[in-house]
Image (tube, rainbow, N blue to C red):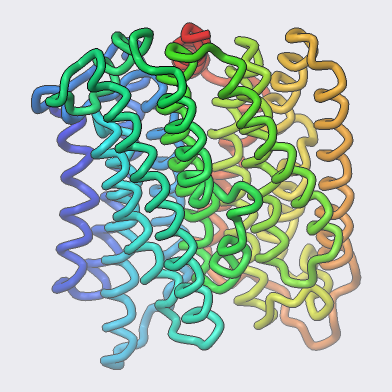
Amino acid sequence: MAGVLVALLVLPLAASLSSWWARPALTRALTLVSGVATFALALALVPSTGVTAAFGGWLRADSLSIVFLLAVAFLYAATAVFSLGYVRQGEETPEARRYTRRFFAGLNLFAWAMVAAPLMGSLALLWVAIEVTTVVSALLVAIDDTDGAVEAAWKYVLIASMGLGIALLATLVMYYAGTSALGSSNELFYAKLLGAAHGFSPEVVRLSFGLAVLGFGTKMGLVPVHTWLPDAHSEAPTPVSALLSGALLTVSFYAILRFYEVSVRAVGPAFPRDVLLVFGLASLGLAALYLADQRDLKRLLAYSSVEHMGILAIGMSFSAPVAVVGVLLHVLAHAAGKSTAFFGAGSVVRKFGTKELHRVRGVVSALPWSGPMLLLAVLALSAMPPFGLFRSEFLIVEGGLSSQATALSAVLVVLVTVAFLGLSWHASEAMLTPMPEGTVRGETSAWMVGAMVVGMIALVVLGVHPPSQLSELITHAAGELGGAR
């Protein structure tokens, strides 16, 4: 299995480098092959519930990292399919060829950095991988070279860089905490930190965890450090928006969970749970209110991402085993649901030429495949059965009730309901109204429809009956987190 870890790192990077010199048609093919192959390699790791390592532990995959790797790899494959239709073909001008090379090279490099993050064996390398995602994704946000895109990219770089500076400080503080038990030569390997955490200074670990949640929470989109997210998701090309929302935010959450594992062993569960609860409630509450007042389709989905990141944080604060299982399932279901919704939004923008909701009408009629699937994706994001997000949120609420957090569980349900009302109201108004006169009925690309079909299948499978090996993986990963309680 060590060879699988190496292949996972090599494939997207090779596709990115090749995209700079290959012809546009070959660039598209390389991206598709790399995305599908990366997902297949990630699936090959699912049956493994132990630790797979390479290069002396610098590369490492356990059950927790494989869950997040699956989310990233699935989105990489789905986005590769969608991008074949999204990036226009047949344009042989130098500008079009240059855009195609830059787009696919950046897309593959972005995916490579997000695939690398869960495979890093130490907190230091994890920070480096997430820093790389910032640089690459900022360039992709600005790739269309509009005033709004450039402004969003600069805002993203400034806020994310400050957040990652705080995250670097959290990593250094954790290193300092580890010197008391591991000496000054410790490499911040997860296994060593977890084994020696009981000997760390509680005050230092609390400081490190608080900084980590604030720092990596910036990239995760937690309130109040979320302000870059709506602009970046709205202005980026649709495939990039899907990767930002479905993959990048959860990779940042993965980094927080690695600090969480160490912290609960060093200081007990109360402090980490309280910190996550505060950020989670703020994120879910604010997002629920903002969803009621959005006039831009992609910003609507962006605030939905803030909502779901808040749900993840609240779910971890419950810390009951069933809630943690729900959180990890939510990571996968959100990746499928949000990518499908953004893909649908991309089809809408391509069809109607606008993201403004008041100018979009009759989507279900105008887009006979993408329209209904976009509506279903919105319902899935609103936690309607039989989709995966209903199952995961049900498990989170069940975990809250089992941990005697009845009032918090009720607050969670109320805020999710408020978010559902805002999201579904705007979506139904745009999609179920009559189609404007003169609008030509039909899809813009079969590739874009195909990517949405894949996402819908994943949502139904995760909601109705997740594969047994995947369920075992999630349960084992939840045990790694819950076992630290």
